[in-house]
Figure 1: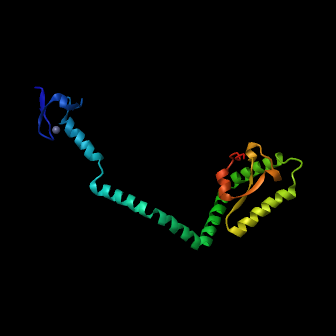
Figure 2: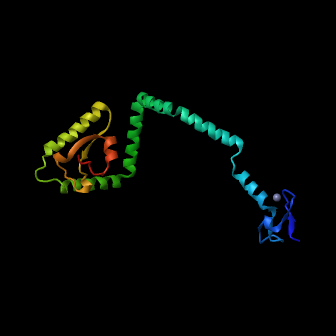
Length: 182
Ligand SMILES: [Zn+2]
């Protein structure tokens, strides 16, 4: 007997129309290959309702993403004080939880600065960069940092000629990357 009746579609098929299954008496699956495939496909297909929801969410997102950005900007403008206060609390908490690491990073940086401060560095001029950065931060409400144009970690000097004031965003974007040489 070289045929077997599929338990799903009830069609009598040759044995090679069934996947092999060693644990079955006949050594084949009771469902034919075609039925197995179609049940796998229907299992992987998202149900119509879910597919529609997904499509709807996507369309909604596309239609509203610019207004969402606008809304979050407005939210920021209206709640700036509260947001900044929250950030301050969060960064204080971070500092308290990571005190040793923060201190170690600061110490490493101070050591680099010290090591890479050449004899002709003018401490007063250097201090002016930090004052300027503070002034801009207070005036614009946007954090400013003093940046080492050639990063300290890349051997740059702690010297007035290697300093610039950047917004924190620009500075963090730059990180320890080398300056673009014009
Ligand atoms: Zn079948």
